[in-house]
Length: 600
Image (cartoon, rainbow, N blue to C red; front, side):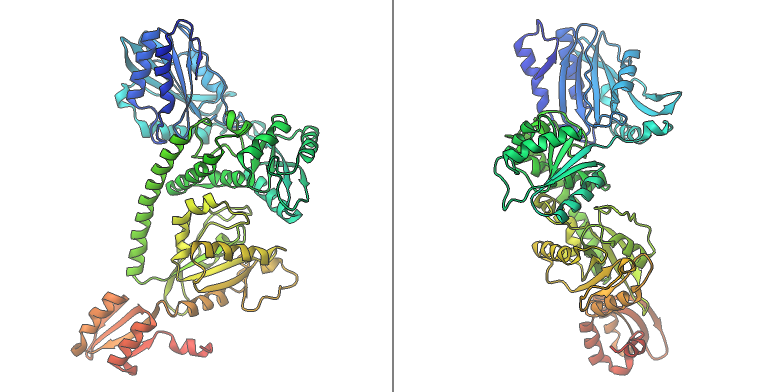
């Protein structure tokens, strides 16, 4: 739909202008020159300003026609907290050909917290140039403004201007008083049918997303109501509770259908309804750092949105803000199925390309015979802290759900010689959305293809055994259930009484307790993968050196009077073949005596 002053504008011209909604700009482009020339042509044909609002992901959200000299710039915040940027950039035309931003434009940029404000000069049906402005840090009680030079539309530094939006998002609260910097949390009411323990976990998820919990309701039902999830009577009670506690949104502890969401929002009279899946997707959107992570989140968001385009209520019919609406997957909420499917195809192709690059890196690791150990487990079980303790790395480790999203790989030295690669993977959780499992399948392949899995469980959690079962279920779904496994009970420094779990290793990643035993267990599991050996190859059997180079990782080779002294990483099978050809005295595992003393 075209908004604003349409009086006197031919319907055919409005219909052509409306087709701009079908454009899907990439997140890498600020504004294509072709689009700006089209806007200039429409402006000259109407002799009126035109503004478009573009989301951070590249969707055109709004097209508005102004009067001869002005265009109404509507406030379209996509974040509930109006102190941050709106995640929308405004691009508008200036009839007469002057592309310079006016004082009114700069004032609108500050008051509406746009990602950027840009003006395009229009004369004789073409764009004469463009100027953009971005917010900066606080100074003198207001945000500073960074103006670009006027540039031809074909010479826009697209990447630089998109990077300027990212900087503005980081700078917009810098230098502001503490009261201004404080984010305004959404007030959330939690609803579930499962158990108090499940609601406790939902509360942790909501707090991780930035919500303030103002109430909770547990409705004991054997299965969800098909219309309203909790039943119409309970929904009316929930509506009164939300009004009494000034709740902004209701978070449901299951995945809702579009019809359930719409019916609940109608009964709740405008309160936004979010299900568990959308909440987890929002957390992933906040935490994705790498390009692949952002693409995977966007793909999961669209896979979730696609079946919910029809029958959805408030959250799909308005440009709402806050939890559940942010991240690289944000698009115009009225996007049709055709555009979503097209974008999903593009995302899958990009993810496959990045996955191919990871496969090449993995192939190089396999060629170098470096074994891989993956840390897997329930979210917030302490995997990142354990990786830091074992490798000496400084990976972010927070007491929050899904603190780690992108896989992290670090090298760990074994005390008895040799090394392995330790991979920290995204945490699992109950009711993990299938859209996330599918979207992150290429990343989770790090666990699927690891030589050994270390399943880290939170010993301080009353739900430890249930969480361990969830992890096993997800691993089986991924096809990694047959990998060699080491079970670890983490956070034993917080446990008064150790749980009965034969074979599980008690450790504390925080204090270092049990880490030596864990490394020893990893070394034993990896013995069938690779292990350091020492060999003396007679010159007459020099061909064995080539065999070592092709099937093992040669660490060093020294030419002596009696032959070639070699140290290499090799597996048991290669060791056995060499032993038959060289004899027992010419070949040995490094530190074999030390291993024997440990009872191996």
